[in-house]
Length: 116
Image (tube, rainbow, N blue to C red; front, side):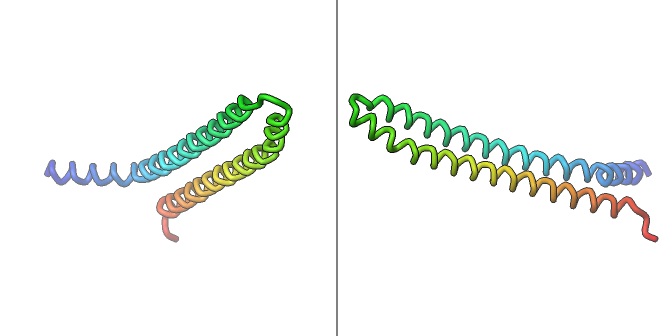
């Protein structure tokens, strides 16, 4: 008798906590993706900054200064493209999370609403 009652209680608890478990998994996946994106961005921006520091340290005369300046447009273009790419990735992750949360909510509302 107690075994059956405990089994029933366990199943009911599992059913009622299922939406929270799904949301937590979804949230964790989103945080993981955002963290990876941020780490990759920091790495890319650091590499770009370090390459610029190395390039400016090579300036010794007017000719090397002119050469350094000619590469600045390329560096700014690369930085702009990196910012656009990161922004698009962030937007994609946010949109995906929003869609998945909306689907989860709709699924739970559907389950919670009695059939008419």
